[in-house]
Image 1 (tube, rainbow, N blue to C red):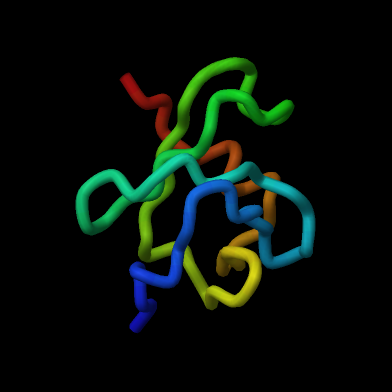
Image 2: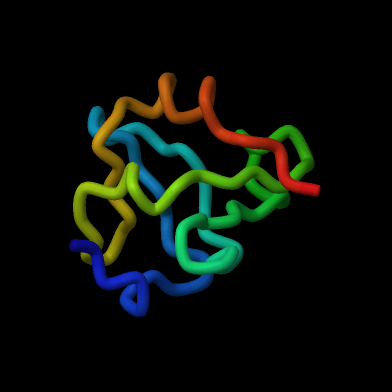
Amino acid sequence: MINTQSIKEHMEVLGSDGQHVGAVDHLDGKDKIKLTKADLKSGGQHHTIPVAWIAKVDTHVHLSKPAKDAMAQWQAAA
């Protein structure tokens, strides 16, 4: 189980392939991470990804799926 308290603002989010997905804006409830809209990959809008996609957290947030898949499946945030 991932300790979501170890996820901090501006941490880089990486796909399982090591490719950049985005940067953490903040936790959105208990089960989602909102990514910053200032990131180049974001297209100028916030996106959310489920905490369930996280494989591990160290100095980065590592996902269990490749960056391409994560970006294809992320949700646009209001």
